[in-house]
Image (cartoon, rainbow, N blue to C red):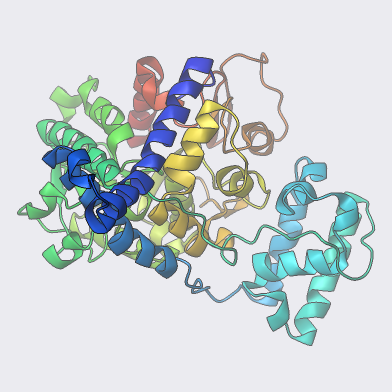
Length: 495
């Protein structure tokens, strides 16, 4: 995150959120009282014409766009088929074997409920969702018996005994619970448009070219995108991307998948850095880059996110269209989950030479931290308020997480990695989303960090892990030194 925990930052973020949230009610109130009811003397209190036009536009945007979409995004998720029973049992045993901080496992998955509130049927209700993509009411007798067995395994792992029946606790069931959203005023999307124009200009200036979707697909995104009129079309029907030509004679190109935010805005410096400081470019040529755009997590209103399988196939088509069959796969945050799905698929993994995962959410995804921290935690610090308002409750971001994010498709265990594939992972010590201490322990087989409260690294065979003590989630992209260092790591993967 680009915001810390200081008091000034807290005040600024809270005031910004307060101001944005006030725009809609003020606009509606002004339009109703001054323009519709028009009490005696109202004409004497009309605001200047530009301001009045803005108030009308904001009121219409709330009523015509937000209110209908607020209902549409609540439609039930289209759950994928659950894994077969043998695979479910294998998965649950794998989760129990890699359970860190077991005391927090139940507490966070059951939204801070006390142990006395969680009984046996509550646990089955949770596993009905997480393992079978079902509600408790739709379980068959054989499935209830299977879940009873898993509940017994959990009792052994946690050394507890669940009372029979139902307690008052309710589990966090991401794709079954309601989609938490808050209104964004029209002016916010104008800011998004301006920010994207800035980042697009910088990418164009640095030899990237935009690969657009069809005009129909492009117009389904709001605010509209100026680069939608680019002359080059994406090889995918659903995924646009930025492309930098690959001219290197001996090194592999890079496939980059971003995280939640304002598209590629936070990553432009990093993408530019990959070739800007490349000492081998004059001799060997530039390393090519494809930077995928995931519009459903880019603070816009548009089409729903494709399924994990659909997105994986669309990315494969893009790589195939450029003749890239041996790429360095780089994913940040949400992008690491997309990368994980590719690495777990034998066909898609054939296109990948090595991988770099930064602030990865894909490891330890069976633990509640990522889901709880992003969707359920009550914010208190400045960075938490920023995450909650600008990301967690954004309409399309929230819909993507609550209706398209199926954890069993996106989790990554070490044994899922293709054999002999080099992998580098970066972790941020102050990450407000990822349980980085637990991920470090899992990846390094419980190796202690060299010195607490300092940056360090660990390496073993094909796996290397970097720890950045002072950074929050995405903080390394705001640090010129760290950004340059990770760009060097990425280039080494290309060799």
